[in-house]
Structure formats: C-alpha cells, structure tokens
Length: 110
Ligand SMILES: Nc1ncnc2c1ncn2[C@@H]1O[C@H](COP(=O)(O)OP(=O)(O)O)[C@@H](O)[C@H]1O
Ligand SMILES: [Mg+2]
Image (cartoon, rainbow, N blue to C red; front, side, top):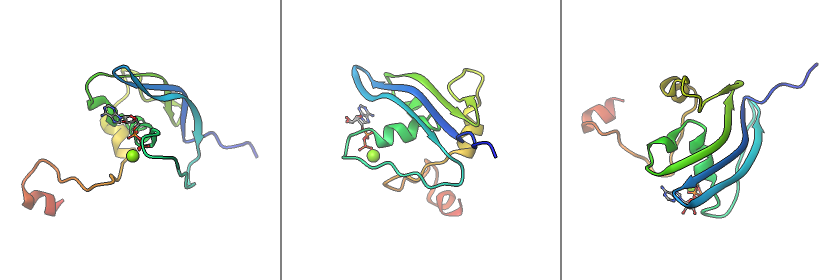
C-alpha cells in the first residue's frame, strides 16, 4: 500500500502582518481523518497558521504571505482558486463566538 498524500500541506509558508513576521518557513503535512493539534505559547502563530488554511487572513489589511498551501494537491493561493468553495470544506470554530452581521432572529435561525 502506498502512503496516503497529506490532505492539507503547507510548504515554506511565511506570513507577515506588515513588517512583523508571524510564520517562519512552515512546512507540514496534515492527514485526512486524523486529529492534529498545534500547541504553543500565546502569540506563537497557531491562529495565524489556521487562518491561512481557509484564507481567513485575506481580510486583514497589510498582510503578506509567501510559500504554498495545498488542499488535496491544489494551491489555494492561486488566483483561480475559489475561496467560497474552500471555506465550505475548511471551517473554523473561533475561541470566542461571533454572531453574523444579521438580525438576532436570523442568527438564531441559522
Ligand atoms: N491582526 C493582527 N495584526 C497584527 N499582528 C497580529 C495580528 N494577529 C496576530 N498578530 C501577531 O502575530 C503573532 C501570532 O499571533 P497568533 O497567530 O494570534 O498566535 P496564537 O494563536 O498562537 O496565540 C503575534 O505576535 C500577534 O501579536
Ligand atoms: Mg490563537
């Protein structure tokens, strides 16, 4: 049996908030149907890394990213990749709950 290719793969990923670098040359493969935990002190870049996996950092001004993130072999930072489809596959549960910018009724209904 051949080894299964990683479901998600980061390759030489560097991430910057303006002049501040938060991720340094991260290369890692994450397997499907496994639990993978990132453990480290506050501010070490766990959330930043997780947000790179579904392009949640894109909405922050002044960020820069280089390197690659592949999901099932496809580079999610290629201009042709579809962010909506990506976020259907890769969700995120936040540390603090956040209502949607809609009415209370619509939030509860959702
Ligand atoms: N929106 C942001 N703008 C500027 N710097 C940020 C922002 N978010 C996080 N950082 C900085 O990036 C580094 C990594 O933070 P973060 O990914 O939140 O770490 P962790 O989740 O491991 O606590 C920290 O130095 C933090 O201050
Ligand atoms: Mg965090």
